[in-house]
Image (cartoon, rainbow, N blue to C red):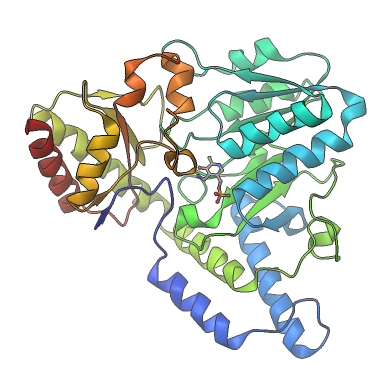
Length: 375
Ligand code: PMP
């Protein structure tokens, strides 16, 4: 199988597998136990936290480990909104966020009466910071925006939004899931008060991630119980996954530039090849985007059928987000740009790369795609 669905999840790197397996047999103590086995495990958690904190250039006490970006997003949004309702009742997010943000703020609206603005991109799909500025109100307490979109790779103006929020009481949550380990991610550079990520998007294990938080903020915990994570997230730590998360992050950072260039090359090769083969297509990548994602459409081709044919031919791609692909719902991201009834919602496929892909794989993909489309 040739894997071109890296925005959904990435394969574990061999060194990550080794680190996790070694830890599975070497460490089983509960990090909260005070005997030496417990202390050894607690050291591992501490080291993983330092790895993340060093990568983000923030103090390690400001990192909460979670079960992934979904939990980190829920923790930031619910935890902050409920603890700060007296400051205002308005939340802003974009219409193209991941469901773990969209459905969480919808829940805050439905159950707690928060007024939520879901800001759409412009008609050409671009998303200038002014769209957020226009929606800011004196009672806005929270703005949540992704750094890059998981369906199109589109980079959102997090730096500009962070800058304009400095003059405002609203705190800034950034979902960095699609950029962590791929470009330099420092919450302070974009003035983020909260920042979420998931290990399995950078060749780490699934079910583990983290939330950075600005310690000046007051927010509620989502999971109550023991005193782990400075009482901000109860439950015995996911020790072995944290070993994998830290290893994957270290490796990603070591080769961050060469990995990025390798992915850029894959992206360019694919587009050049499509043109060489005279395949008619258009891109759904709006404005500056991560090279890791190509959201392409082939006029009059049904994407579900195309995806199935490519799957049978040995290529793993998707039509959009893995979290919604199991349903027959059209992409909410493309819908925000093209409108509900557009035929364009049935044509797109998402090809997403990691540096583990090769130019040969891309060439094979285009050859197969071309023969499927010609039939
Ligand atoms: N945010 C974004 C932008 C994502 O791409 C994803 C994963 N598709 C998530 C949040 C949720 O991550 P997880 O499923 O690991 O909790």
